[in-house]
Image (cartoon, rainbow, N blue to C red; front, side, top):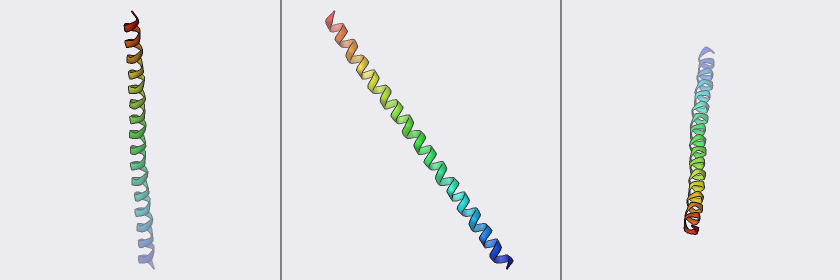
Length: 60
């Protein structure tokens, strides 16, 4: 009877660790996607600012 309880406890621990690993990987992926989106938005803003600056320079 103790052997079955030991296997169950080990199975619960393995499942718990696996869940932690999956959640950690998802959090890392989500953070990288958010960072990439922020960098992309900054790049778009820079391109718009450069276009506006070029238009102003051409007007003068």
